[in-house]
Amino acid sequence: MSATPDKFTFKVVLLGEGCVGKTSLVLQYCKSQFRDSHDVTLQASFLTKRFNLKNNRVELHIWDTAGQERFHALVPMYYRDAGGVVLVYDITDPVSYQRMQNWLMQIRSLLGPKVPIIIVGNKSDLDRNRKISKEDAQSYATANSALFTEASAKMNSGVEQLFVSLAGAMLKAEEEKRASGAASGGAGTSNSYNIHGGAAPTVRRGVTLAADEDPAEADTSKSCC
Image (tube, rainbow, N blue to C red; front, side, top):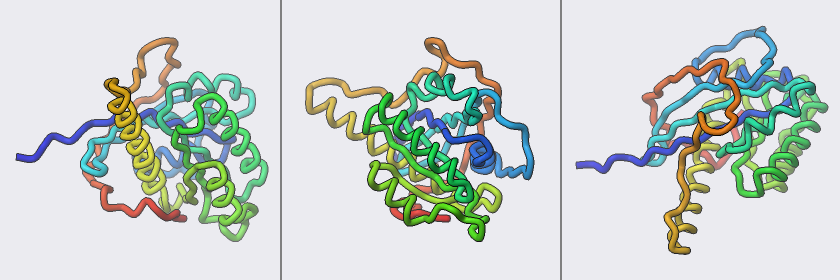
């Protein structure tokens, strides 16, 4: 009789400037949808994705945040208990790349150096209009202890892989927490977070989708585009 897999629930927050495609990435991953035009995100919302990874049951609560500058002061309340962060920029927009770096510094300052982060260059289908080289972005990510990939929400290229890669990093971080707790004689830390406790922000959209696929065999060591 096989053992029941452990269940891990992680809060994942997407950060980046407006119009870089954060909402498109989430909708493509969770609902296999892409819209050429959509309403600007004005408040945070989340979708839920469940899948199996490395003999564990993983549930991601993926929070999509508003990218417009006037909402920046509100963003910290959403990522305060994040288990992982997706930092998105547009490969054709140098300003979005620079501001992504500002987000990374803020995340490291408030959440510490160990929270898993993946930097995503979105709109890889617009390669002929590229302004940020993949090599420069990869070097920046490596120097800042972050994962890196490129993706295209429009073409559904690299989208699942970026979330699977981040989930793998979060699982590894959780295992290290447990090992540290066991070594110190403690019980370790919980792998779940409370989405209803404290001054939780209002949820605009919460859709739960169960995924039957098992990406456990995916190669998470290399970036995709």
